[in-house]
Image (cartoon, rainbow, N blue to C red):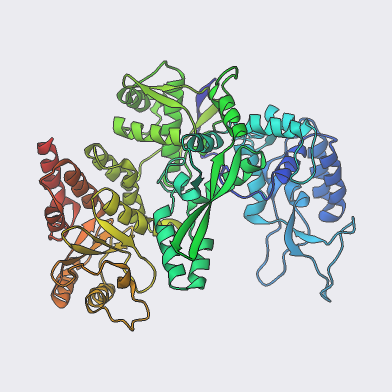
Length: 635
């Protein structure tokens, strides 16, 4: 096992490994791998398809030469290029690459009269597969360790595992032969994410749905691994069904899925085809004659046996886990995050065990080309511990014994690429997380992601996660009851406690700070609505709240954002005066720090907490020292 640090003077290639991406069927993926075997049936069929799939004779000659030269070593462009679609013109009916010629898209090819054209085999002709779906096959095959991608040349070759799968006896469609299943299980038990999926199921005596699994899957709750949250889904779908709003219920079922939830669903589908996982249904009863189902997963006996291969139980030799630098983060400052995590694995693999401080020291002192790998960025021991939690989440077995982290798995050889013009660096968000992380001894570190979600408005697909995770923090960590609402003409959430304190919560994700401009009328309307409770309102969201809340005297509002800018205090005071309601502006950092104070100091209750949220100490420099001093003094 060798994890090496390699220096590249100029920026080299990274690769998206297709985590959770849809490749249609396992059979199609196996077919793509077979294209790398000279003279295979799949390759013969492909070359025959070139006659009508590829119109450029020079290109066809080049691709045939690539496929018939051993070892088969096409470049990424050879495999996935496509003709650019010109605006206003139909897409080309011809392919420009190996996988493009092999895989058909969904759209049928028609002549000028609208008649469907036939291919050479007499089947309905389809346009070549395009874009992202086309490249998924390559990225997933590389991610599973079936193909190897050379970072310098961009050439792709088949791995021993891929060759084993390509040369085994094959079934038809999604019917797999015993030898195929045996080989696939062996391969998949070297893929950390599948191992993590099965291990999570093995720790539960009941089936788990995608939300329950997604909350702790992979690098949980960082960008690219966010789970929408089962509680919000169940509550929202229940409300829609009770109200008879079938259109909204359909939208929730179809669209309420975040990244980690999607990974779980797709991994569950793949593993169920090998009988490692059994699909079940969780039934949620709303009323006597009204209920709904959520698909769930349970590990099978065969799945437990496969997990034994991954973990080296009984007579099994522990599988070597396939890891690439590129799979260690999917969003954010990926160069920095991947490099730190890869260095953690490197130093753990070279030792019998290290504590977090020792790991941080080794990472910070790592050098290549007489320069520090991290370009003078500093990793803390708390940060190392959080990264290790994530590495465990993707399926690697790292245990803690006598304060030492011990890597039980053997890792495949891989490189840590250090690019001269793209050195690992931390973002401003990460620096703020670093400052707060060591102070959070009681607050779950998964909520540090709130800082990123609040300060990065470019994470559009994760925007709803900021709303739901904020409400989850208030309810799960701070002892409030509440409900996440969201959507048009509704606050993002409402929280309340046993003393009937009620808080309207509105979250705003802006990377340059939020000014309140143009929004105070909305919050004023929320306050008016919850107090007046107009029955004839078309969207009576307040009906979901308990009837005994004191919304006249004990109602407050808060805006939660990464930071605030502009004339925020003037606009805040105007809203306070107009609504006759106390309210405040809460930076996420303040939310987390006051949350820590609440959890460690029994004398700091909701009254004090709300007082801090609604005072005029809005910006970081205003409140940080006072809150931190009180936290440290209490300890």
